[in-house]
Image (cartoon, rainbow, N blue to C red):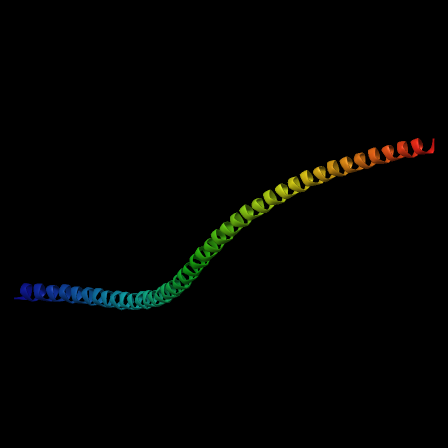
Length: 148
């Protein structure tokens, strides 16, 4: 019986040590679990904060994108209007050029006709002057004949 009591005491001591070891391990595991839970909560708060920031950034980017899209649409419309105005101005310039060419042509034609008329008038005047000179010469001859 004494061997059995010793065995039982030894087993009790061993089991007591095992229980102490297991209790220490359990405390350590609980400590790790608490630390992991705290770290998890911190990470979760950090991730939630990042999510809120990224959501706010995404909203800001969307608002900026929408504003830029409105500006792009406005600039495209302005470009279309300017293109139309340019086309209209080009057409008007082309018409004005054609009209200017017509006017220049008419002016050149008028100048040519005026030049012809002027030359004709000069020729007529020269003929009249020549005729008068002939008449004067004839009259001088007649006067000289009469004086003699």
